[in-house]
Length: 362
Ligand code: DAH
Image 1 (cartoon, rainbow, N blue to C red):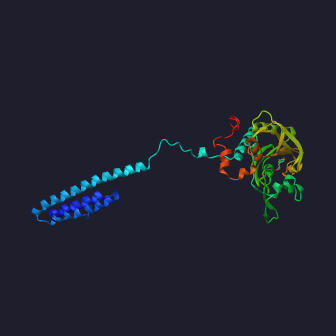
Image 2 (image 1 turned 120 degrees about the horizontal axis):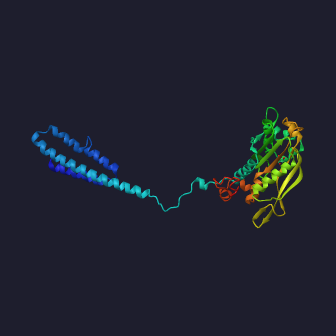
Image 3 (image 1 turned 90 degrees about the vertical axis):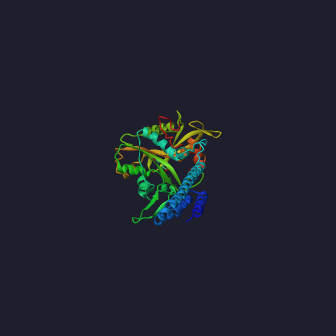
């Protein structure tokens, strides 16, 4: 190869190097020139076959090209690398003046029903009650028969029950219509003295502004050898004061009827509506919040307890209702409509765990 040919090869390669738009393209140029089968490397391989007097000059000339190309490659590589870094920095720049984005702990909300259930649990736990649980799908026996509502009992009609198809034994499972079957489960499993509450979901085929097909109750049950109505009243009064966080709550115990208690009562609490605000424990409006009474002897017999030895009291409280009352939420249906705006407004911060010591809703 002649000197002018070498010159033109060099300028061709330098031209290609200067045109390389990125590091990938530059690498291709490098391989084509200096790689094992590159054009400059091939010239070097010719040296061996040359007569010695030509070899020196040609070798020097090729080396000059090689050095020029290698230098140009390195210069271009540095240039492209720093351009790539600059582009990356421009693209990934963090604006440290932006406000910190709130994480899930700050943005998430606890549903008022969960929060109020925790509040109720906290209060009764402080009074020595433990938590019992039962399934949403119940047997007819636990939901009705053992609670002194045998088949054909008229009170069954009041419950708007969701039934499942009849099973092989001829009975129909159902969605529990109240938390009272947990009384039965507890008494069948544990020996008195018993002191439990059982919060959970219940179901009735009913829907309007104050009723949803699924809602929440908490059941209470105390069984011992000397339990009377005075204990029941005291427990409920203490509960209401603690829950509504007021020193006194006006309560009204009305005679009522439930098949599983005798005597039975319904309890209303007094409140006043001042503008949009609801004041608990004052005023002349009443809201029914629970049913209660002394456990019926037939219920004790159904779970093999001797009514001559044991008595007790029970109560069933509507969680959603007292949540509405305490936190001023007007429409029960909004509780279960999954509207995030509602939850943002009425929900609780995840770390606002209710404790008696810190104040339940503080
Ligand atoms: N289970 C009743 C209901 O859902 C509420 C109730 C009333 C529960 C009296 C009780 C009780 O434990 O003693 O309507």
